[in-house]
Image 1 (tube, rainbow, N blue to C red):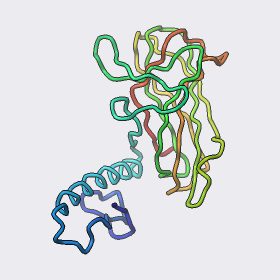
Image 2 (cartoon, one colour):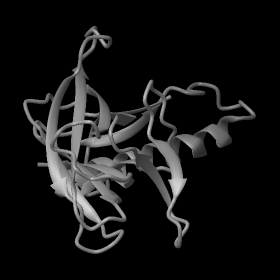
Image 3 (tube, rainbow, N blue to C red):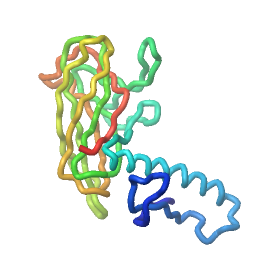
Length: 207
């Protein structure tokens, strides 16, 4: 396993001040035949984590969900699909019912924005999005009811035009685990889009 621990700034990740990579896998076992393989795996894994941290510290964004990379467990999952012409991967959120995707992340700032990047074929109508979330520290109960924040946004005036909807989360504690459920409340009275909403990306930004 790999860990990120306090140390000095990295030349490759100058914005990620105060951290370096340490490992526990194969420590003290220089003769292990798998050592080089696991070293390479650790480096790739932790560099990805470092990049996400660096982007947030610079005011950028960390990608949390992309439909081709993540499944959608749960009782009312959105459905993996593709756009008709481009063939690009999307998750479809149905009309008149609630559908969701589940994402787990780490809290990287006290206030964070969940940004849902989506489109729809009709050019009129609103969609109600909800970010339900549970934040836990060590020894915290990970199986209690989630809090939630909603946001309503209109579709683009362009057919299949991109829309970015922001749901803000505040009062978070850096380093805690953040479990998210991103839902379309298709049966809500304010959700007037009579078609699927197609999500291409969900990302987390420092507010």
